[in-house]
Each structure stands twice: as C-alpha cells, then as structure tokens.
Length: 111
Image 1 (cartoon, helix red, strand yellow):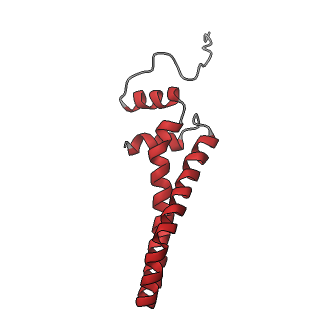
Image 2 (cartoon, one colour):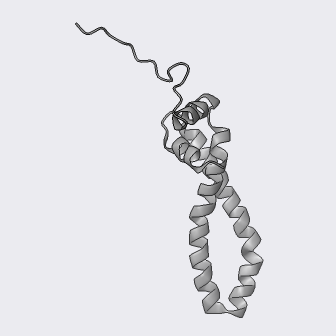
Image 3 (cartoon, rainbow, N blue to C red):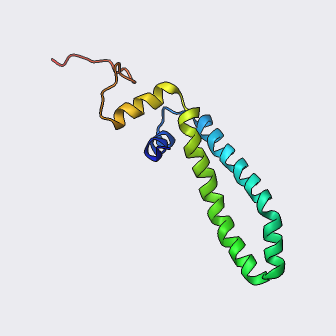
C-alpha cells in the first residue's frame, strides 16, 4: 500500500468528491463492523474491571474511530479513483512527465 499515493489522491482536486466520500464511508462501515465484533469482549472487560474497562474503551474507540476509516479509505482510494488520475500522479511522483497534459492550457503568443 502506497501511503504517499493515497495521500495525494485524497488531496487532489481531479479525484471526484463522491469517490473520496465512498472510500471514507466504506471505512466507517468497516469500523462499525469491527465495533460489533468487539462488543462481547468489551462487555466482559467492563464487568470484570469496570473502571479500567471504561477508560480503555474510551481511549481505544477514539483511536479506532479515526485510524480504521482513514486506513481503509487510503487502501481503497487508488482502486476507486479514475485510472488516468492515478497514473498521472504516479508519473508525477516518479518525476516522469505525462505523455499528454492532464490540463490543457491555451498558449498565447506574447508580443
């Protein structure tokens, strides 16, 4: 997984907003599924060690609530983004000029 590529895709304006939202939405769905799987263990820990269980749960849930959706979004973004944009960013990262310009700017002659 290339974190630099995913970060550039997340910040790039050529990637549609719905693609970024879909990746983060899938990340939140995975987070919800992981939370449901942890529920029996958290209930047991809260029953055995109430104060430690609650403090640990709050700290871990907060970290998981950020790390899991972003991690899943970063993993999926290169596959959900338009292929042309991904290839252009890969070439930019490798310092290879694209074959044809991504954005065509009309060139005017200066007198």
